[in-house]
Image 1 (cartoon, rainbow, N blue to C red):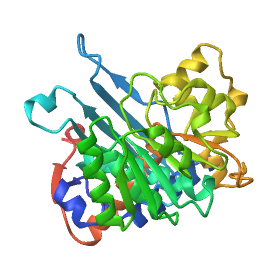
Image 2: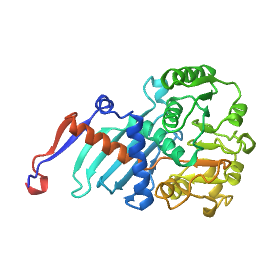
Image 3: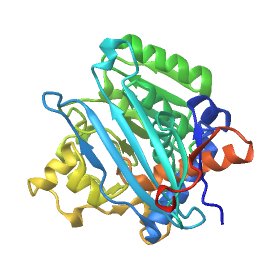
Image 4: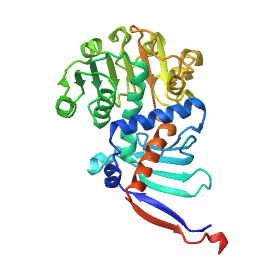
Amino acid sequence: MSLRCQCLLLNQDEILQVGATDIHFLLEAVEEGFRLHGLGDCTNPPKVKLGRPGKPRDLVMALPGYLGGDYHMFGCKWVLAIPDNVERGIPRSSGLIVLNDGETGWPLCVMDGTIVNIVRTGAVSGVGARYLARPDSSRICLIGAGPQGRMQVAALAAVLPLKEVEVFDLVRERAEQAAAYLAETLGLSARAVDDPKPAVQAADVVVTATIAHDPYLAWDWLRPGTFYVDMASHDAYPEVYLRADKVIVDDWRQLKEHGTGTLPEMYAAGQIKDDDIYGELGEVVVGAKEGRRSPDEIIVFKHIGIAATDLPVAAGIYRRARERELGTSWTVWEKPWSAM
């Protein structure tokens, strides 16, 4: 057996070349991650959050995990969002993903994680919609017109017969730009709106993708049958979680113990209990819990991002790159130091 350890390095352009933004690939990978999560064939510990004195808005996280099934890999996503970067004229977010062999632990790949972080989040909502949205959902309201909001709509449009989208953002120009983009790329009837309430009340699917610090979305905004994708922190009032027919999450332990926003704050205050959470999406995917039961149910899907959905996307990218002989081979060592 060779003692040489080689690792593949993949940059952002190479990740795009192998189809990292292919929504159908992403949906398949993320759904498999939820299946393994539902079966317990993965290790998905709480994410590690870091900070620094005087910079409370910095978001620095490590999401380690292990995937079983056909993957048999360890991995970790290292993602950083530094708001001050906007003033510096550079991207707010960056990240890396490391994959390791599940048998030896040796490194397999180091890749850019920025794209995976964005596209995975959209795909999670898409998989949720497969099981939790009304199959005939055609109208969506997007609140928050940034890149993540656009990705959310793209993923949802891949699994639902969406026809119309109304976009609200505090910056009207940004909402108009997002509406134009969604109309052009997805063929939807799209328009910017000045008031989110009527748009939510008329929608089959609602997505909040903002950085709001105070809630604004009230229970009476949601009509029967709504599928609400809650991927932000403070958008919904507590009554939304308390009165919904089902609240489904990606990982309840992580959310209640390490998440931020209204729902974990409610748990810490004793306003909501474990039994008030219907279940995790992985349980629905494997059939341990029922998804949508009737067309009138109002279902909230709250997700904060877990390694079990990051790693199958990264593993799929790595395998595609190997097949196409893309990337740079890095010799980590010719012979391990301990054997010299």
